[in-house]
Image (cartoon, rainbow, N blue to C red):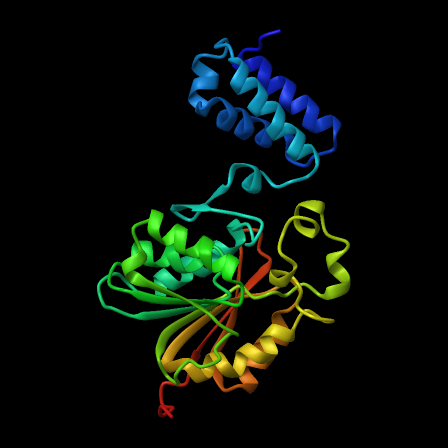
Amino acid sequence: MSRNLLQAWQSARARLEAAGVPGPVIDARVLVEAACGVTRADIVSDPYRELDLEQTARLDEYLARRIQREPVSHILGRRGFWNIMLGVTAHVLTPRPETEVIVDHALRLFPEGPPFRILDLGVGSGAILLAILAERPAARGLGVDVSEEALAVARDNAASLGLSGQVALLRGDWTAGLAEADFDLVVSNPPYIATPVIETLDPEVRVYEPRLALDGGPDGLDAYRRLAPEILRVLRPGGRFLVEIGYDQKAAVEDLFRQAGAVEVETLPDLSTHDRVVAGMKNPLETAG
């Protein structure tokens, strides 16, 4: 029996609701749009347009995967972030709106015009680095990740956004091998979830997100212990850093950066007013080397 767009959306929503999938209304609409090659406006203006057999089969496949709690970003292979669209696979974290705090603050710190150098540690899909570079044509960036699979995703995203000329991507262990005092801005969204907590997370994260990008060790702070002194080492005097944190890690991460010699350390909230990003600066009076 054929279905029209309205019926397909209503049926998809009901199936997701019955399976206990969070956000069924939005997910149903997004999956119908993707499966049928239509927009939200099409569903409103032409709700009785019938689906063909291929569209119906594709939608059923998408819904079956979502009911298994596979993230929509993995099903569709893409996710919007800031003002860009990114390819996403199981080898990278799905970019989240909370992380846009880093991009927003970076753009405030570095106005358009003057050139500057960015280092993104744990670059993943390239979300943070590419979102900044897309709005700052004079900037140049280096993205480092230990995962070659993640770097392949970032390379594809850089190419599709026309940013390959502004960015270099390197497989490495955080800052190992990087020169001192070489960057104006360092950004990072490191793994910060405590190991025992991971098994309590929703399946979308626990099952489908790369464990390497989640696991921050017994207390979630392992990456920051390494990163704080190293970020200060590779920053130029007066250079800035922005690192994402867990909602309850403000005091601990701020203290690690202060102990490493950072100044003007503060924590920025996300739109939900949760502590989200620790920001600070390398002492401008510190001499390089």
